[in-house]
Amino acid sequence: MTHNNTKILVTGAGGQIGSALTPMLRTRFGAGDVIASDIRDDISPALRDSGPYLKLDVTQPDDIRRTLEEHRIDIIYHMSAILSAKGESQPQLAWTVNMNGTFNILEAARNAGVRRVFVPSSIAAFGPETPREDTPQETILRPKTMYGVTKVAGELLCDYYVLRYGLDVRGCRYPGIISHETLPGGGTTDYAVEIFYAAVKYQEFTCFLKPDTMLPMMYMPDCLKATCELMEADFDRLQHHSDFNISSMSFTPEELAAEIRIHIPEFKIEYEPDSRQQIAESWPRSIDDSAAREEWDWKPDFNLATMTEDMLRVLGERHTRGALGY
Ligand code: VAH
Image 1 (cartoon, protein in one colour):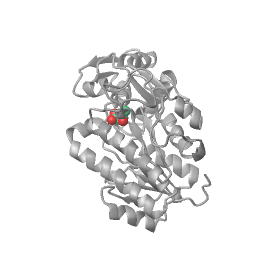
Image 2 (cartoon, rainbow, N blue to C red):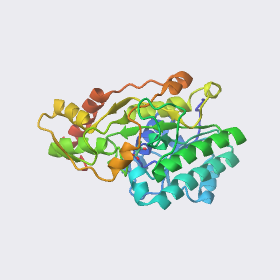
Image 3 (cartoon, rainbow, N blue to C red):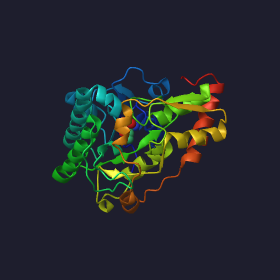
């Protein structure tokens, strides 16, 4: 995919993945060509001041159409979403943002001649009837959360736009993503983000999942690598479009705590499971990502040990500067 003066729009740029994806795209393709957008007002100065930013509500189709036309957008990374736990407390909002938002983006992209659209899915598209070990690419998709319902419907909608209109839409089923750039934002896997902040600041953490709750996870650098490599893959190689299983590691809270203790021996963890336990138990324990490996050569770089070391190094340095923000 040639990038000279390609105009890119990122929706949900202030979210967990968007806030890491935007700087990476700006470094790669030029800050002025990557327009960050979000509905939030609390965008970080780093994101707001490092390139074009605009407030955009993806539930407003006219605003999207006008943005694509005014900025002559060629590529869209549609990262806006209400995640699983928040989606259970506000299911109607989750449907409106996740489904109407995705429909509005696809319709506007089709009509504006946008070249390529990335729409993420999630392992939340799977449910308790899905095989939980080495969950296959093709399997039962009967999620029990509104977030999961919107992810399955989103995958089907995206594939419809590929087949019916020839719109180049791509996406992958992200596992739990761990990063040191944003605090947790309403996800069930977010215990694996907050634990690092708590370990650095307090050397202790109370986990909202049971100690043996195994979940597929991925470090942000691998998430960004998968996103970019899928978006740059040869379309003719792709048998799938918006629903690629991707994986890098699976671990439990007690395994993560043990890895943290290698660096912070005094770290203590307690467990107080809440409603998110039921969500987590409806998701896979591990993922078969052979389709992504075959169709666009996916391969992760980080594992539990290297992710933990990097997270604690970055957050430790930030804490020393008094800038942990937690
Ligand atoms: C969530 N982090 O917990 C998201 C993710 C697989 C989970 O989609 O809702």
